Amino acid sequence: MSSQDIAAAPAHAAGTTGATSAAPLPVGTDAADRSTGFEATTGGPEMKSGEVLLVQAYVAIWLLLFGYLALLWRRQRSLHLRLDAMDRVLDRATAAAQATKAPPS
Image 1 (spheres, rainbow, N blue to C red):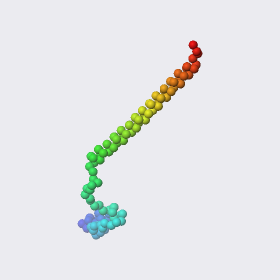
Image 2 (cartoon, rainbow, N blue to C red; image 1 turned 90 degrees about the vertical axis):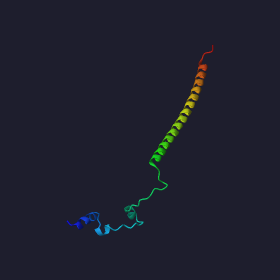
Image 3 (cartoon, rainbow, N blue to C red; image 1 turned 60 degrees about the horizontal axis):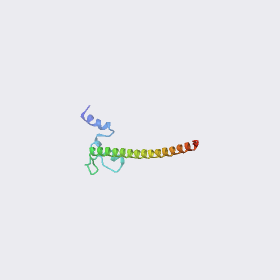
Image 4 (cartoon, helix red, strand yellow; image 1 turned 120 degrees about the horizontal axis):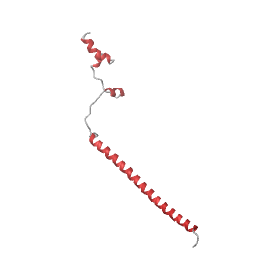
């Protein structure tokens, strides 16, 4: 095997010839052209530290959890108030029923 065969083998394996593989690919607007090229970019204003994002995520989750617990606490308090009112009404109804059934003394 000659040195030309060895140099052409990777290009042949990729489906191209050795002459065209050395030329840079033009960057066009076609989706296939964009997917083959890579252009490194520098960080912009949208870059954030992973640590900052992690802390923000934890804060958001804890706030949601505390909000949900506060909602449950309010609902529970409302239920207790309604049950207490029902108990008072039931006690009055029971007392009234016993008063009407009691024989006169």
